Image 1: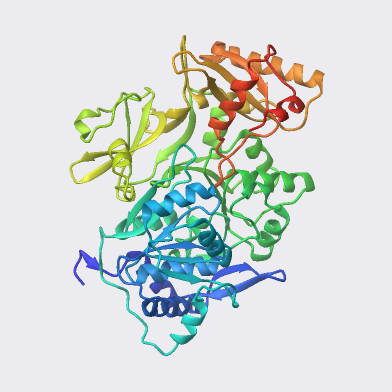
Image 2: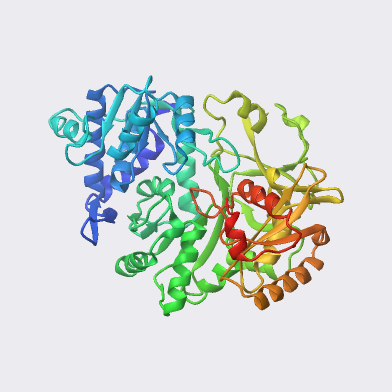
Amino acid sequence: MSPTEAAPELLEAFAQQAGSRPTAPVLHRPARRGGHTATTYGELQTQIQLTASALTTAGVIPGTRVVVMVRDGLEFLTDVYALILLGAVPVLIDPGLPHDAVRGCLEEIAPQGFIGQPQAHAARTVLGWARHTATLCLSTASRPWGPWPRLNDLRRAAHDSPKPAPTRVADDALAFIAFTSGSTGHPKGVQYTYRQLGQQAHHMGTAFGIRAGAPVLSAFLPFTLYLPALGAHTVLPVFDPRRPAATDPTPIVEAIHHFQARALFGSPALLHNLARHCAARGLRLDSLLDIATFGAPLTPAVLDLLDHCVPGTCRVRSVYGATECLPASIADRDDLRGACTEPPAPGTPVGVPVPQLTVRIIAPDLPATSLLADAPALEPGTIGEITVSGPHVSRAYFAQPRANAQAKIRAGHQIVHRTGDLGWLDDKGRLFYCGRKAHAVHTTRGTLYTEQIEAPCNSLPGIARTALVGVGRPGQQQAVLCIELERSPNRHHQADLEHRVRRRLQGLPGGELIEHLLIHPRFPVDIRHNAKIERGQLARWAARTVRVPHTARTAATARKDRP
């Protein structure tokens, strides 16, 4: 094979693992009647080949865009790997998105195929998703359910068919599309090439020290995609990926103990739930050597809880990145804790950029530009927009010319991605995150960044988290700090807490610009991680609330205005 046209790197890595360790477990997933069902590397390889044969019979060819909307971990891995083997393009859309957003994603992507569980097909039929383009619709139901052809029936029919070899593909050909969560706008389809998928797997394996055969508990399904290529033994817990914050921690603890899991990957909300459960019951998770969270920085409260349940040698890390670039940088608990006790400047430390990734800070108000020469890098210590470039950074959104013009800058053969995040680099190359550009609060007396205010206030006892929002027009906004408490307050407790927050604000640059403190019962959060605060909803609630002449409200009163 030529260097520019070869079998996909992700598949080659998996095939090497399956060839050398066919009887080793690749996946344990929850069984219907409790416990876990095991799948070996050899079994997964056979299932992928059968599925590829079945999909070929059904009409899938190289370049066919196929939405995969399934929850079962084995089905997810099998279908995605089989599509990649055929040179088709798997498309992932977050199932927790509002129906209108899913419809928009499907209209934009115009898929030719749709593989999904029966509920997904029912929603697709009733709501008219991809009605005019998706002519190949296959159900993953284990028994007859609805009018849709079942993938299992096609697999059985393909048992005696020749096993397809991996399609030869160009490294820079489109391999995969994953939609963003749309937490700061309309979801966008992020394109990945075959080379970039391989690079992402490499970065994940290197960053988290994943070793062949090591049990890894993964509660973050997109990350699970790479684990078979790294030789990991993946354990999927009992949890709803649409609501990680509501996950029952008991089966997760049981799975960690039973499999002696070496690593745990999930959202900060899931980890907070787990750590609180273990700390309250004196439970230890001593087998864990690595914990990594995705989606939002870990709070001091979670770090403190983890001290009670994981070994001091366990590496607890917060991953900074985005669908367009994951991972970008990684911060450990010492980094995060140091920022809480002695903030060197506005922002939360998110670590040093991963190898081969270049991070540059450009002017935050720079208009869209296609040339890097028009976007000079700012000096260390200066807050601006974070940009990233490197081999695993997505080069484009699918069918989104306007979004590409706004977020992509050309630098020779490379593409620089504008993240929409604010931050700065210190003189040692460490990256600090200051919040989203869209979430900065512009008052008549200056601009405030969310992490500038929230990170120091989040460390105060009794506070679960805070959120800075602006009320009014940019340039004339009132700065409002919304507060979510660890428990419902009484009047004395609330007055004391407000006093402590005001004292903390007095010691912060820009703290004097905060005009209102508002107690909110429970912040609205994103659908993917249940950790990113939906600030648009919170700002609309605050706009209604600050019209009342009190600067703080009780949780009971706030609940009436909850978005």
